[in-house]
Length: 156
Image 1 (cartoon, helix red, strand yellow):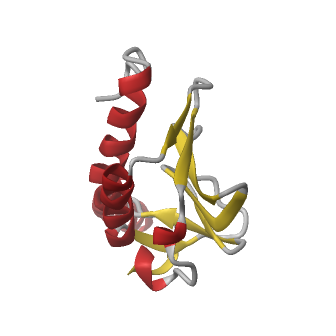
Image 2 (tube, rainbow, N blue to C red):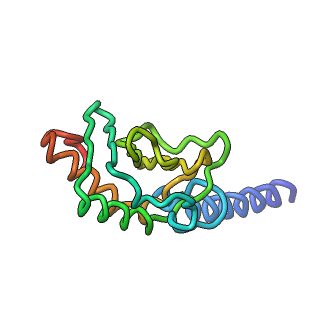
């Protein structure tokens, strides 16, 4: 009687475990950060159109300075639509960053640093929501590849 009850208990436990595990195992759906996603432009207290250039640093050491107004407007427009979530205090979001960019007015950073894994606005850190940031990431990589065609060759 006891063995039958234990077998039934183990059977239900395994079924429940498998169901819960399979429901939560889609790693592509994991979202980092806390709270609900918010549009990047909601965080801005600085007018990015005041920037006279955007300095981009890629993980391989390539540096690109963008000062063309049309290109900068396209970048800012895409950036403002990216959604971000507040970063957990000790959260790790991946192996490393592909790039980060700073918005500059003369020699001063305008309080905004955007990277493909982390965003800083006036000292507060956020995480970009990946699906929302794909278009901007692709634009930044294309800009870098104009200077260095081999840039991030493993990234499409």
